[in-house]
Length: 443
Figure 1 (cartoon, rainbow, N blue to C red):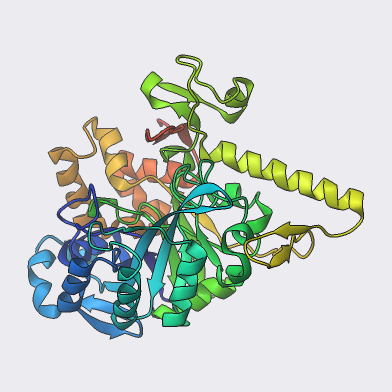
Figure 2: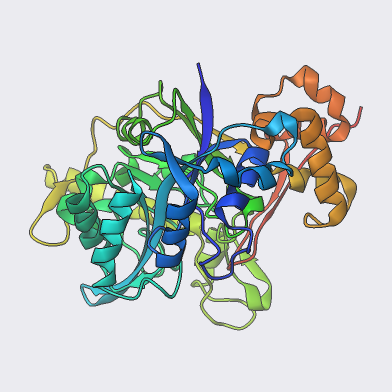
């Protein structure tokens, strides 16, 4: 069965703090190096980026686009022969919603997926009437995500909204600082149209499956890259021939014949996994933070509550709701926006779960073994040399037979160690990335 990797949440060079290589050509090149067959365009709401997409892409599969043939020659020069593969683009973007609801400022990011550039053009016309979509590839709008979803569905019923990196403390649906406690609370009567959520870099599938409101939705994982070198650090595996509808319907139904699950960094590597205060170099587990009243033991200021802590907090909230239901002897109703409501599901929880696998990106493994920085020239040269021999990164990390990995020395051993979960983990906190390294058995 044909399989392929997809990374649907990326950013262009029109987003803030992004690499100038975040161009269609740059993404095309790095997609081949990484083994990503379907890459999001990102930032489809930015007029200049959208114009660039229109001029450089051509529809090649239903709802998916390719770089025009005449633009491929130069980037192909940097792609080893073994990495050469077709790359398709899905029209995607991200909206930052900052708005008030129920007397509280909410900050929620949404990943949008569209079946065509024509649908994106219609969306841009609507959004430009609401706010400034020209200042950043990821525009900041005073737009409730529920209203954004309503607009998307009016433009095209096949358009999709996926709540982005749902646990990030500052800008997400379930974030500790300005989010909600459930999908229903955020999207109200349109919650039925939310069939997938993005886990983000600081959480993984087991953490998300502790939360009842996520029982029936698919989990997706994307890089949210600001540099194309980070493409595929989180990704999704699919089966069959790539098309927009195949991907969307596969996620909607969680069909294991279409969806092969997620590829994830270890969540400890994410920069908001644990609690802490970066200015004081203070990192805390949720238990330590709770014991301190969520205050930094160095300066006394409030710490940034991390993703793991927030998961535990929501788990406690749903446990309290369960106890209340049992004591009442009837189902409780959870209030949501507008005049709609939804019954909390205690029974018939979906038993099927899409798989998940962890990786440490290949440049990090090379840097760890070589003793150089991950962005150093030596690591870049070793990376390209290895791809010349082995082919693209994700298939090498995930699919290479153990016997063939023996040909790659310590790097091969490191890949096996990661597959077997033999890693040391130091959790990230308050915007500081964590560190995960393989434990290699010395023979």
